[in-house]
Image 1 (cartoon, one colour):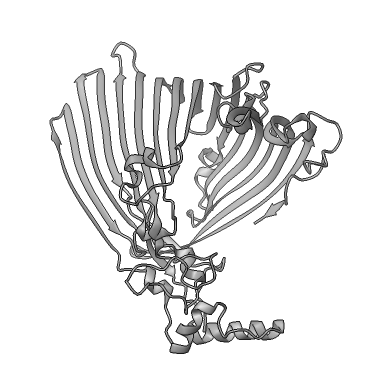
Image 2 (tube, rainbow, N blue to C red):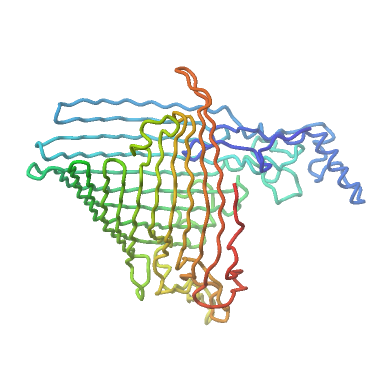
Length: 553
């Protein structure tokens, strides 16, 4: 009997983006009863043992009676999706509005999976004066992802001779006794589970174009998002948890961003100038609490009275906050759409970096372009339709670390002292107050071209990028009480070339056939470590060698 699998050997599941599976692309077909027994007996024969014709004694009665269970069919159900929306829009020449509502409901193809969402959206744009425009957009949604769920992974490994139901119709806890490592794939349906999220987002803008300065415009954008969520779960006796376990998690996320933008553009003959200035600030906050309790006298209350557990609830909370402030100035210049120049300077400050290092870094860049196809010596020929040479040089930054990783942290520890439980601290994470921005400086050379009435188009690009002060965890002697520390580690270089070609093989009003070819190659090299001039064997970092395999695709 064959088994249909994806490339990884697992059933391929397509998800709808809302947390539940939509359908299984390649459904797994486990061995049926006779094939399963035959494989088991061959296994025992090769091992030199002669046991039962099935792995567990509890499966023998079903084997003798010829009773089998297709667990994949047992956990599946007919799925359905419905989506309803209504919208209204209108207004005047100066004021326009749009309001919409949506209701989405899905029943998954695996038992227990379901998703519901209600959302509302509104947009308003208004021209108050010839020089002042404002607008707002708001969005609210509430989603429900409740319900205990059948377990696809367990259904794949359960024996076809396992017993899914007790005589009274309830689910067996261990369907293939005395095996107790694998539970019934349907037990998740007995749990109480709630998973709900609300989302509120509001944005607004104001745009000012003063009439006394042509080409000047100021715009302010503001966005605020609030997202509270709640997860609750209770597993009791039907699940095989004889004491009952309840869990509650509440969290909320708040984010805001404010951007101030100033634009100015001017054309003088064949010269065109475009200037942009930016000042922005953003903040992300996250807070969560969780409670877990066990030892409930029955399964009626569930998570609704978590303090009823005989064991005191384990309570945890966590909070984090990160901010980013940015300033940017950019000048674009082009002459006769032939010669292009862009100069940019950006300065960012992030709260995630250490107190003994600057939280700010400046990132300059410059780019040059030459539209060779717009030159007079190429305008009247038909072979080259577009040809552009590009060069750029610039620096970018990375702040991809979690807040408070620069601070040394301790973890709580419970221990017995004087016959009673006491709370202490143990080493958990070593901080690094000197952490700063990771910076990558790169040089790019590129040519864009279109030939034969643009039937052949493509881009050829070469890049050379050096990254300094990489944000990486490195090992340190365990005698310090810690095993790793987050640090700015040395520098690495990446060089590569990329080629993209597109050919228009057939072009008609009703049919187009195009072929695209992409090829690339990259080599990286560790230039230095910073904290030592020698190789770091413990961290498997070798100066002059690649950090990983070079790639050619």
